Image (spheres, rainbow, N blue to C red):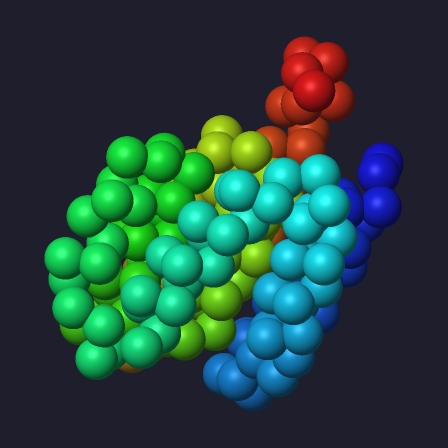
Amino acid sequence: MTLVESFALASFALFSYADLRYRLVPGVEIFLIGAILLKFPTAPFQIGMIVLACSWGVFRNIPGLFSLPLLFYPPTWPVLLTGYGYRKSMMGRADLLAISGLACLFPLPAVLLSLFGLELWRRLWIRRHAGNIPALPGLLSGLIIYLILRSLLRIS
């Protein structure tokens, strides 16, 4: 397991516990900054595009046309989707920052599997609970599925 994978798994395990227990995720901003610092030397263009997509989602005064050029770069798609959800108050800010951090650290299939894990977690959660859904345990489950599939199939 690489440093990036260890950093992401440990962070998401702590964030998932905090999301389930307290409904707050302190330190997710530090995770995003750490992800940016870890991957910026190897992929500066990807990190820049993801930071632009994340900032479009966080700052609501940026017009929607700003996101149009970002649609031509597929790794920003999950971040733009989550940013739209945050702008419409369907998702939390911590979810947007966590998905942005994942998009910085991992390739697009990992982020998409994390969102798939989130959907499976949502379907499981609404059977037993009402109200807001903690998203980070679902993102963690999707990330674990990606890492297991990658190790079984030896995909780099």
